[in-house]
Image (tube, rainbow, N blue to C red):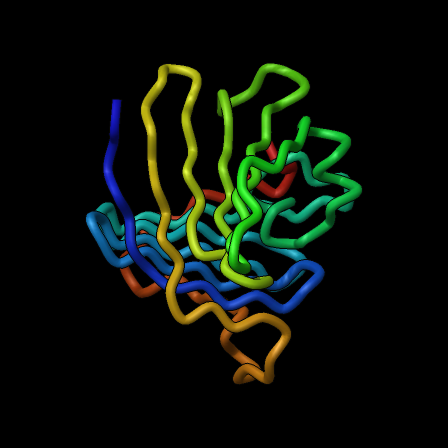
Length: 159
C-alpha cells in the first residue's frame, strides 16, 4: 500500500554533515553538523538532538554519509535497474529494525528518490530536488539553533 509522498531538499558534505528539509506534506528539518543530528518538526514546535556516533547504525544516516562499506554491513544490497544512467538499488536489512526495505533511485551519481517500507508495510517516498554534493556551502548551513519556544529533547547517548 502506498503511504505519503514527501518533497524537499538535501545538501550533503561528506562524511557527516547534511541538511535535509522536507516541505510537504509536513515540514521537517534534519541537520547534522558532524557531532549532532537535529530533527526539527515545525508543526509540533519540537526539536530532538542526537549525538552522531562513529558506528552509526541509522540507515538514513549511512545512506547520506555515502559509506558503502558500512551499508554493506547493515544491508543486503541488490541492483534492480541500470539503464540510461538511471540506477535503482534495494537495501534489505540484515537484522530486524525499523524498515523492511529501502530503495534508492539515482540519476547519474545523484540520489533522486528514497522509498522506504516500514515493518508495518507503510511505504514512504522521499523525492530529492536540488541535491548539492560536496559543493561550497555557507558556513552555517549545517548548524541548527531551535527557534524560541521550541520544545527541545536531548538524546546525546544516541538512543
